[in-house]
Amino acid sequence: MKNALLMKIEASYSLNFLVYIQNLFLNRYQNKDEWKFPYLPSRGEFQEDFEMRYREVWSEVARRISENPTNDLGIFIDEKSLFYQRLFAQSEDTLKEYNDIYHSFNVWWQSMAGQFAVESSISEQGQTIYTQLAECLLEKGITPQKELTLSLLYDDCLLAQLDLPPYFAVVSIRDCLVDKELIDKLTEAFFTK
Image 1 (cartoon, rainbow, N blue to C red):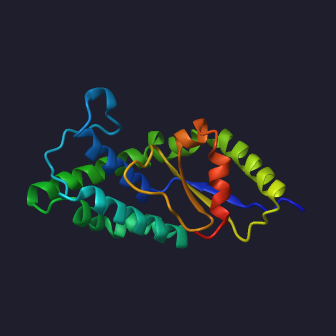
Image 2: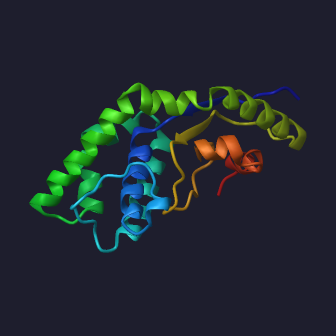
Image 3: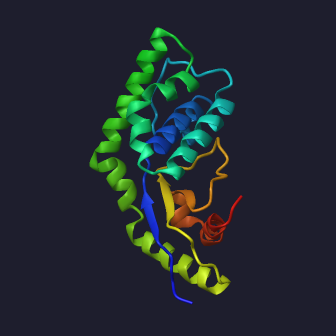
């Protein structure tokens, strides 16, 4: 049996924006030592049932990206209001705050310190992950039927389950650099859930 693994790693605009929003939300309830990037003092209000809504938006966006990765940028740009309408309390002040959050993320993400740095941070480890995963699949006699897409996050997704369709996985930089069980978790991406 030959290695048939095709794998790509992409840092999603939309999923990373959701992590950015998640961290803003979590920072409101954590002490200074636990704050996550970004820390932006914000007066904008989140929906009362934010965590449930977040899980719903996360699942919808992840599913759409898994079906067609080119959906990602379209969701982020063309459906900018999706995140606001579903996650933030609706008011003029909150809309202004949301627009500031959106633009702050976009400026960071398009800079060398954003998407480029996130993807570069695991470039060497990405090759190791590929090699270890290919070896694991060969050992288990698993032949991939299509390309595996890894969607890379700058930070952990803490508020949503990562139950994803086959051949699509979401991993954080921390997962790639620290998680000793990452290959076993990625192997599960080859099975229907």
